[in-house]
Image 1 (cartoon, rainbow, N blue to C red):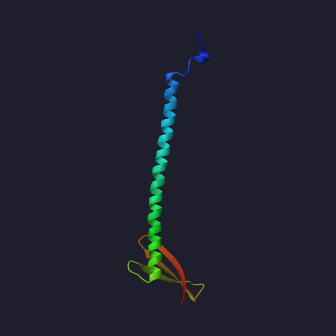
Image 2: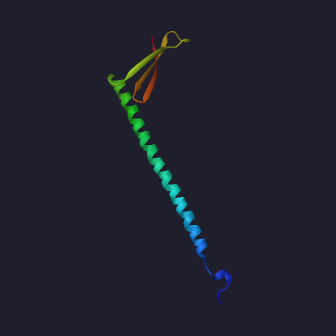
Image 3: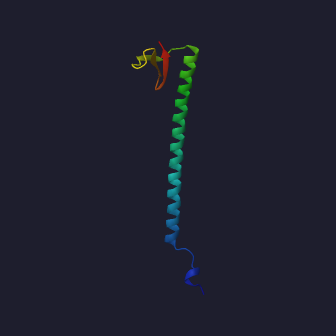
Length: 95
């Protein structure tokens, strides 16, 4: 009554298909977790950049360190590096 083409799937074929789908979901969930972590790190870094920018604009130098360097080829200019935690701005200033 039933020929070989009408039997359906074997148990082994079903297990392999479920394993492939489970592996794909595992990889997808790992990628989502990494993306969330990267988003959090980016937001934190951007907040620090905005804080440093605001502090410099308002003239509030609390927590900011500054290093100034001469620029050998341009004696009328100097390079100022403003550090705030792990964020820094580089600015070229006239002497």
